Picture 1 (cartoon, rainbow, N blue to C red):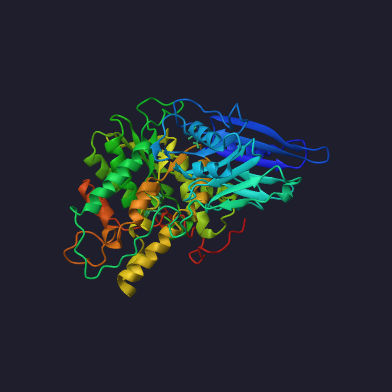
Picture 2 (cartoon, rainbow, N blue to C red):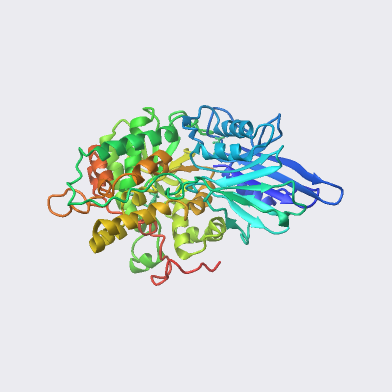
Length: 551
Ligand SMILES: Nc1ncnc2c1ncn2[C@@H]1O[C@H](COP(=O)(O)OP(=O)(O)OP(=O)(O)O)[C@@H](O)[C@H]1O
Ligand SMILES: NC(=O)CC[C@H](N)C(=O)O
């Protein structure tokens, strides 16, 4: 992941991030830090200065594209935290940040055409947060992609600030909504307080879900035939997942200090359905001989420990639901893809007790800010230690685990599958109460808020370790296909119980897992990360997820 930052200040001295914030930005982008200062207005009485800072985690194009990226001719500048997989429907070759800068400067042209730049920004597919100075038009563009897969925060006061992450103590920052692209006209203001951002929709068509596709709310006229392994949607899903994974796992550069056969890609691995299907298809696509790490987090939960005083920390972790499922799915993947070097990484390190988890609490609270509830903290904690990637590594041919830190700088997450394919208990409940009309309403609600609510938080806690999380289920093409698919081709509540091999929730994905030979995974129940890894209710069983954190 990269770190991006912009400060618009009122005096001629440009304002760089504080040393603490600079360190946080460097954690996200360890390969390079660059600063560009642009005086904006000097009319004798007042002056504005824009300082743009970027840190880079270099992953595309075979070279380090130093940021902020500058167009020599126009003087325009881009801070880019993202992966543009496609521009205008065409795959991006080379470095994506450089390709985006060329696209934007060409669109702006000599007259600084705002609409053309917005049109170019709308043509980007992939996760991103960005800040772009169109120098000749004295216009600043900023925003997050339509699913909000990358973080961007805003703080207003004496200065106008944008940043991937907040400085400590994190107060006064708000998330930039992923509801469009924002512009500021810089030439007209004499103080940062006067700056007035304008929002531009990602899509003019308001009926689209997440500005991506039209939700299929069709309700069947009669009982639907069962979904089977031969149903077209199963093969279509396989095709979409394969196409989504290809750019996300291929051409990842060898990480610094690593051998070519070392892992470049790791899966955040609960052993559940969504992430194991990703690992299985990634193995079909990736070059043979390249290792894939499977990172599984499980925690010593003091509440559970107090009920099992004879067990060691390591034994308590082994009892966590996700550790049990993770080991089983690791064994199944190893059996089905025996030539792939898989490594099961148990994190945090064995014998690291609850105190170590607690030692990171203040940092975590700052990183996830402005999210601030107990539930945010329990999810963020599991993701933070998973993305750190440190623990014990076990290669299937050698049963003994050894201390290991993943070499992978690209992490895959299975997030999004439950919303797209109806994986939550809520979906079953809605069907029981009101049949397909109720289920369709519930699914529509979920896809409408896909990503937006939590992805900024997750980005901030995981990018902290100089790694980048990619979400194959949140690929625009896959999302569009899934939301245009009728509900009964995703989950299959008309046909459940005796005679059905798999649960109705996310049945299309279960049937795909079955076809891919990972049969026990196909039957896995949904389990939220904070319960599977036992980071929820660490101190008291009575604390509510919605309770605000006391720092
Ligand atoms: N214990 C864990 N260790 C490592 N990564 C995890 C763990 N639990 C969840 N994850 C990662 O976070 C993603 C989203 O978590 P979520 O709680 O939504 O699980 P899920 O939707 O049930 O997915 P899955 O079926 O893959 O477990 C998972 O797909 C996986 O990539
Ligand atoms: N990881 C990032 O966001 C960096 C930007 C760009 N994708 C690069 O690899 O240079």
